[in-house]
Image 1 (cartoon, rainbow, N blue to C red):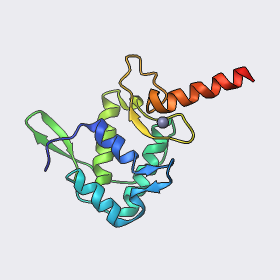
Image 2 (image 1 turned 90 degrees about the vertical axis):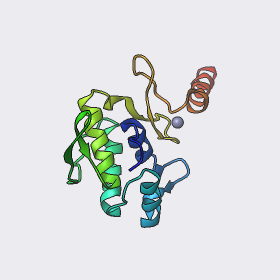
Image 3 (image 1 turned 45 degrees about the horizontal axis):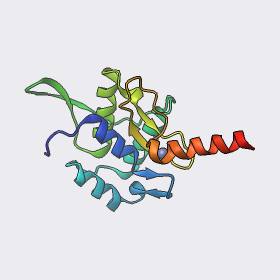
Length: 152
Ligand SMILES: [Zn+2]
């Protein structure tokens, strides 16, 4: 097992297995899921379950209330108390979502508001009001667009 990855980093990276901008999906094939899981020190698990979990969680972070796949989570003890242990990609993403929800931080996991982007990110702004994955890229693009429409 690798050193514990932060829940928000793991979840954001899992959500970003779908790249709507370039229309690529890392979870399109079992090999893609295997590669993702091994980068995170996890076992891949079932491809269909991983895809369903990913799609449900992308809906969840945009304010939806999706039906979550029945992925089992196990509690185990570590030096800090009790934590959720997970083996597969889908379990780890769901466990991270549960922890972030309990901590009141799941609302900071967002998808970029730019329609052409929809990249997941963790909002570190003080009041949690960031709307784009990156101010430099999508934020400026949106500002330029609204500037042009005001000029017209
Ligand atoms: Zn963006």
